[in-house]
Image (tube, rainbow, N blue to C red; front, side, top):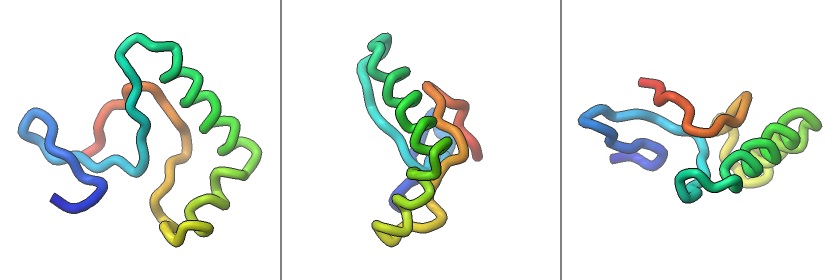
Length: 69
């Protein structure tokens, strides 16, 4: 599989970015909140160009988002 793609229940989905945290930990919500703050103040938009990965970003962070096909 290509980078950024994963197999889930027999379906291939694509995820731009992600964090892994133990189920039920408050860390997941805190990470999501921090990323949303970076998005809101435009800092997040500068990160992909710094690392030459433009086009790999998200508009909003969410905990356990539904996969997109």
